[in-house]
Length: 278
Image (cartoon, rainbow, N blue to C red; front, side, top):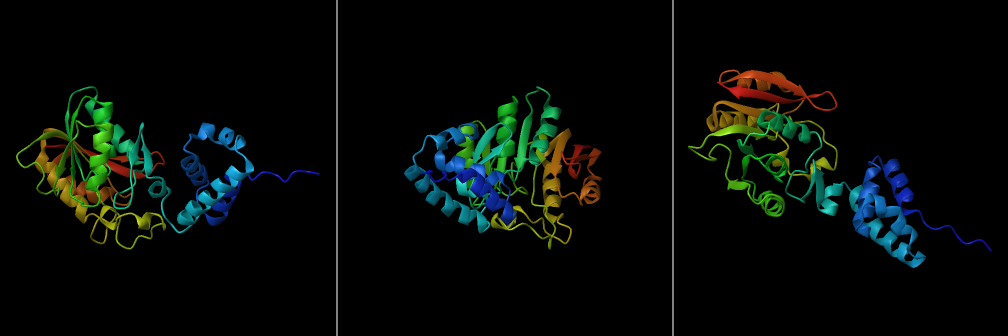
């Protein structure tokens, strides 16, 4: 008598997510989380399990799949998000680090080029930008954040990954009065009002997403004004923005900055602007 085929949990979940329009990679992430293993260990670990153990894992996985189907970001479910070379703790109240923002860090590192620069990260959120710069260069880094929901995530990640990063609990308009820095880096809220967002993005804090004003540049404008106050003469600014905002950002920079340069992300979208203070 033939034995019934064992459940292929990974394939079943991938197929289900594909049918739901959810990235298939989320199936691997959730199963790795349940089994507490790496992607390379996943199949071997499943092969070594009994049918009873597989059934128990299946029940646990189904609960997580339902949460993901209801729009909860996979990073909030697992409590982890990768960014460059490190993994960050994240959860409700903090923006999830995005792969495209890794290019913003690269722009700052290109400016640093081995120097010990003073860097300030405005609106630090999870701390991924500040921590990446602190761990990948010799720079002294300050992280500014004033969201009561995001601040605990910043504090956790700094304590775990880069304790030398200085945290300032402040609005960017009042942060570090009287101080000057070599580099200001910022990923402010910038999404224009009315832009339709995927359901999982709508689970993230709106204060970290929407930039204010019809075109979404109201908050970026306050970050640029803060950068002008905080930068030394000749200091470097790198800011992330919506792909539709390049011209508007350049106009906001035009009075106080020079060498204004629009930079595309890895998909070819105009996503960043760099500039140097007059």
